Length: 231
Image (cartoon, rainbow, N blue to C red):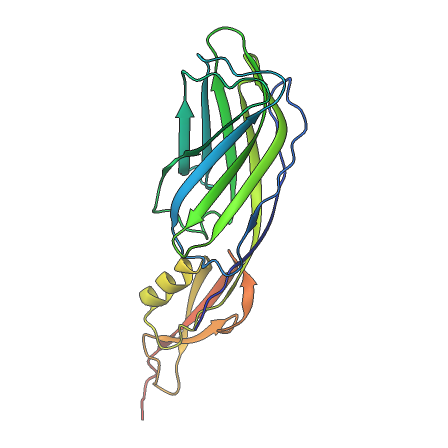
């Protein structure tokens, strides 16, 4: 069975502190990214507007999963980002254990640590590359940070879909691993199997195999129990 993940995203900025302007984001990806594809690399580019980042101001960019796990990370100090200039793309340190399913929603965190006063007007473009050759881009512009407002966080949500894998006949542990790798949650129940064909195996799953659902959907698997008599 071929699993397919279509990513259609919007990023809505949550801007903390003062001096932060409006932001827009346009995430996109190639169709067909598998939910179990691993993050293989990430890169970020900064575009400075009409107010530079001082050379001694530390800037940091991170991509985080909903649980706070850092999927990619970049920091730089010692470089002035002059007015109306572009810096990057910079390769980010990447946690290759993070999957596309784990990033079905997340957040981009940008922060600065200035030495004294510094106001920086900027935008960014951030690309996430996955092990199956697809990529996802997040872009935001017209942002601002300064010594009094040092951090902003922009959540992103990817509308992701996947076909439910066929786990009929699998053991409970194997079925759970397969479903979770597809980005799905699992609930386990049990019932007597009058056919005796699925004892200690998955005899039903709901939604059924092949059903296209959103990543994160709960799939209920029913494990067959042995009846008193098996023919």
